[in-house]
Image (tube, rainbow, N blue to C red; front, side, top):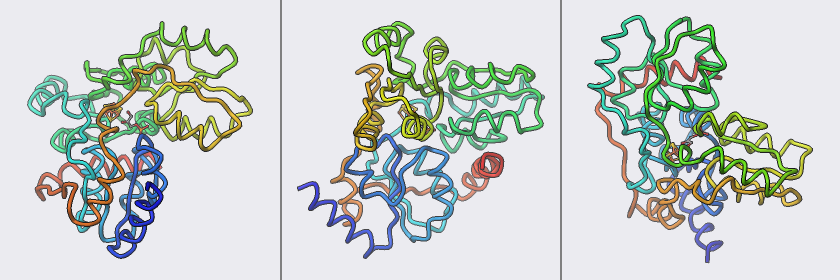
Length: 304
Ligand code: 13P
Ligand code: SF4
């Protein structure tokens, strides 16, 4: 049944000139039919270069908006309209504007997990894989980093020569994980390396053998000579790695490390989008796009 549906999707995809982009947190059956699977930064790059007229984003809303902003001439669908990112909605633009006013000498660096409106206030966007590089590269000495306090702390600790203001935002799934969870997992799997996403708390990140984005974690595990890994990011990555490297062992850091928004999209949603019976077309105001896209383009230039 899954195989048949996948075959139908591949046929419809070719007939309708559609590119399917899937974030690495999507389920295995969706990743198998995607034209491209990767982390937020890699998906942004693909969004710009994909030759197809139509794009289906299997991920969360800010990712579909990023595709639309980078390719406004394309028809962009979010495969499941319910898929948002709670972190992207944590601060409203008026609040950030007030902080900006109070600190006019600070450059605003926005995690890409933000609304388009928030991006209009940013000088540059970053993703988890590009944040360090970009914060080092920009000339600003003072950085207001929004909204993720954990990614912000990770960057701040590694760039002590710059001044940072951090806010209290973050990913509810990654921030749930405590130091104690790591100690329990390490005790259960003493030979495993611990790989973690920088959206986790500093107390968790400080215990890691490797810190990186979803793609970074997958690449590290695939190339490593080690045979066992505790995976400190959304649990879908455990399954993908187990398929990619059947001779290695992968353990979830915690059964709590689940993003409900990333889990809401199904293979049937993708099928329905292709039949014109599902998904949501991303429609954005031209002025909003013109203003918000600047910080995404700055990210692509500095981060590549
Ligand atoms: P990546 O930069 O690893 O794609 O992270 C996106 C995300 O939402 C992680 O929670
Ligand atoms: Fe947002 Fe966290 Fe889900 Fe990523 S894992 S999409 S940051 S809620």
